[in-house]
Length: 634
Image 1: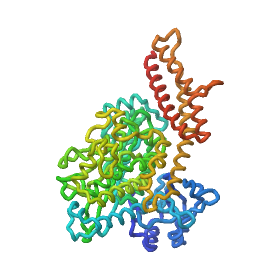
Image 2: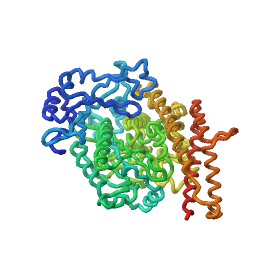
Image 3: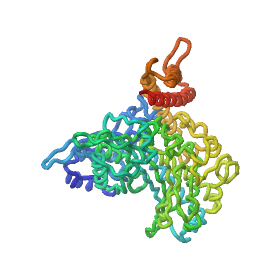
Image 4: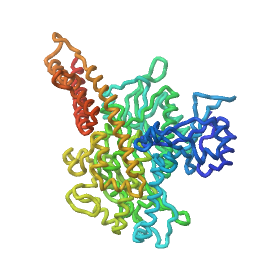
């Protein structure tokens, strides 16, 4: 069924003639959808009958379609009384066909398809306000500035191994993401203790897949290759427990973690690819009776889903040769070129204002806690020496390099998760990198000088970087340093969404870095912050607090006074105290959950954030104490 279908109309084939030829040759494509992406990371989807699209193709490609802007996440930009937003097609990227395998027509039957055309969101005909255009404009600014900087500071040519007369014709920002996800049979609720034990024993990591999980994974990989994504591999990740074989011969009680990786592309196309691939993964696994979640932390106490984001920069010379601008011309002498060091230093120095785009939800923040290799410290690792590239999985941004392949040199930002808005993450990361590159090349620092600077100790003053921080560690930062030492060396990590988003106010100088070039302007930043705070407060009030109350009510007494031990009685007293403190009001005192709701209702978000931290701590203590109590019940 998957052979002979139209999967992609590639960039470069978007003329009217090309579009007509491909749609006419594939009558299974029944609809067209223009896909804009708002600041919340939500994509639009409307079904335009393909014949209507073809009959007025010039209008659709030039003017797109109009949406009620109040229905997308653009607060403080598109309001109820000013809601005109146009969705304008982007001809510079691949257009993918989304097939509905539940709806087939013809003989032989083939699935009905929708051509999804990535698009831009335009408010009042001139303000580009979507996530895709922010990344597009970031790449343009980055490319223009780096071209100019290389011309103005020719010393960097020799550091890159370029001849003095080498001319750069094009600069491409390259990116790739690693997609992790949990898959399970519907209604399955895994035992956290079993999952944690399996994780500690590494019983699932890179193991052979079985049953319908194997079938769905293999079908997904084959289907993704039809689209030309260049899948490198799919495999089990660390999380999961062994499924059970039912009487019917089918596996049941499935709960495991998988990962799929594919090749890199330019930044905008890479983000588009990821968005579409997540739909394919969900659809194929659902066909096989399996639920997929891309949540960052779907199960507390067990490894979450990361989406390590790889960021690089390549120059194309006149004549066609490709040069990695992060790679040193002498890779046995220097870890990085001056441009590479500048990019890494810029990302680390300004990360506090990048973090709100990386983790703008309660779910994302739940993953970014010490343990499970969670990247909570603003620190990098280069390797123990230049000739033996190493990988430190405990740092925020790691250097990936291969001595035999200079084009592979890139940075791996380990904090993003599959639910984050990759367009805005990449845009913020590259704008931060550009700030460091401008500083380094402006001062004409060499690779040797920059290695010393980025390796400085806390308290040492150094060019560009902050005196009160350290920025490099080749050690396991969770094993070698205590929590207090980590905070002293690398800064205090935010715990709640509110703490994260208020970095925009607490670091005004760093925020100016994101605003350079007018891409992330005040209106867009205010809109994103407003959307993030609203989502955080709404979810906390309407979902997390009720969930906590369900936990409180679910911790019931399991022993009688005649049947229990003194330990049972002691533990139950602790549990009752916690239950009352969390969830039961008295005339004189309000419980913790009530106080969180009150603070949210009053807009006292600083107070609500502090109470949320206490709520997380107390509910975790309740869970742990109740688990200990139940273990002792016969």
